[in-house]
Length: 121
Image (tube, rainbow, N blue to C red; front, side, top):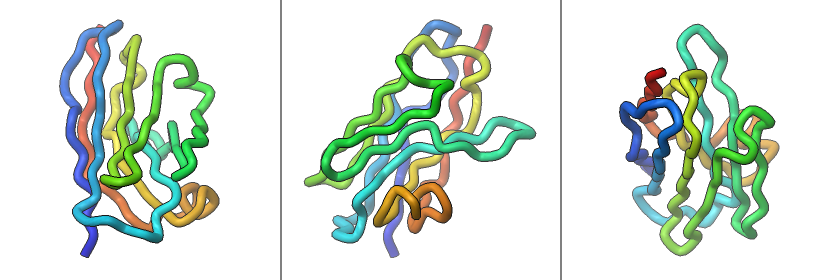
């Protein structure tokens, strides 16, 4: 059973930064796309950033310019650098992985357990 394990969440003041990390418990050769979802209280889960094995990235409009996703293919790890945090970024952030971006968007194959990010004003 493959597990995605997130780390790096926490409580931070508005304007601060966090770096989230996600590591797969073992190398998964069928993973081509990894990404980060978030779910705020009372809201639907949304995909905020994703990255292919080739390094192509995509970001939700709400996070462009503030979030940066990066990946280490050899270690099957993905990171999310979050700058200029705002209270509306408060959410549980989930790592996800899939064979394709379309699968990542519709039904990711692998999910992490989530890490809480709380931004105080």
